[in-house]
Amino acid sequence: MTIEHNGHSVPRLARLADVLRTCGALSGHHARSVVQVPTSVYTLPMALVEYAGGWDTDAESVQHGTHMYLKCCLALSGNLTTKVVYSPAVQYDVAAGSGGIRASWAARADRFDHGLRQSWGALDVGFVLRSLFKRGSTDAQDTTRCSDYVVLFVVLRRLVESHFLLVQFFICSVASCLYTWYIPRGLAPGMLGNALSICDWIRLGCYFCMLVALALYRRYHTICLHMRKVFLHRSDLLEDFTARNIISDTAVPTGGLAGAILFPVAGFLFGVVPGLVAIFSHLWTDEPFRLVSLGRRTVPTNSDHEILQV
Image (cartoon, rainbow, N blue to C red; front, top):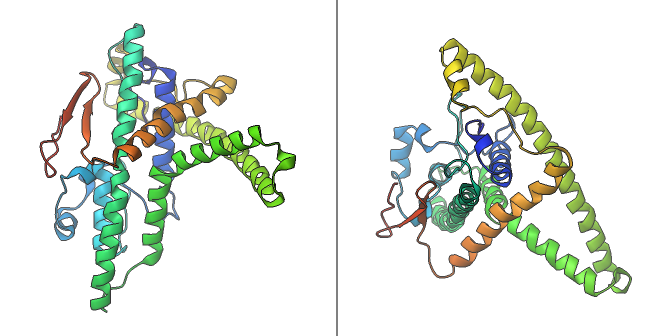
């Protein structure tokens, strides 16, 4: 899973946001992971889709891949195994035109819209909780059904990590900083002061862990890009791709001090802010908006049971 096309034609902050999203998606695909959310919903076997009740097209299924994985996993009471299917497919960065200040700002706006659509997937939390409640009633009546509670617990934890942890991290960080700004650390109660000190070290540790993750992703991207070029060379397409400047050799657009400063900014603008917008929007609506990157158009849904595909 790499974003190697047109990465050089998007702003650095938007590119960093895509890299951070890719790191998050890859974090669950290791050998000992019991929950491996697929990156493509079209790899599901039709027999499994039929057993789970078919495809969903309501507001909760705006993130098709994650939603259908959750639906199939719950239908099988957690007894679901994900098999990796290696393919030469690539992904593109969110871009809007080429060159100029207007295109640069449009690309940032499109990346924010894309982050908002991804954050809208928080509706899956309600879907999972309702499904678990119904599944619990069914398991109580059917003693032959054996649920894998470890997988179900990890599913809930992954949902919290995907949709709430980043926003919660930001809110807790701002609240603790404001508290220590107005109240000196020496005047805080003993337990609270110790807790704030521990949280400071945890935040610093998370920051350095992300720097390590970006360094590892840079090596991972280099390996994948080399394999891609070998594949294109064997297909006699490498010269054409190189001439049209399609493949981006840059994994993380900014390294060193610039990258260390900009990646928290990218995470805030394209992760925290869309998450806050989606969470508060869910207080009065669950209607998603499918956003088109180049056209800057917003197409609302016609009903609760149909999502327009653009």
